[in-house]
Amino acid sequence: MSEERKQVLREQMTGSQNPAWKGGVTYRKRKGNYVSVRYVRCPAEFQSMARKDGYVMEHRLVVARAIGRPLARTEAVHHVNHDPLDNRPENLMLFPSNAAHKLYESCGEPKPLWQG
Image 1: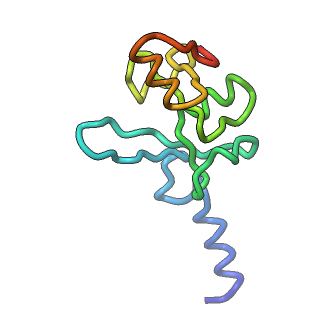
Image 2 (image 1 turned 180 degrees about the vertical axis):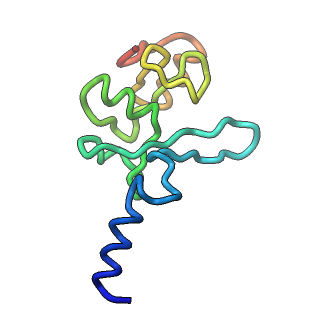
């Protein structure tokens, strides 16, 4: 195959032109009866939060955009209604760590860093 033909195919099969393109969204199948978590393509300004393949959990991206900075790996996002597919900002809370998140769920303290 010539280099010219390879270049044409690269252009035809990149991004939304690829027949397998799903809009930059993927799901991670979890074990057990848990609902799958939605991953989206990470914008450049939040790339430090992304996995190696460039995707980030949608709820983490929603909170990062709302507070205007990338989240640290240790920060935990909590869904108020416990539905991992409901990523509306008003349904999300940000905690400094998973330990603080679990304490909040059990006794209501400490308060979240951010609440939508």
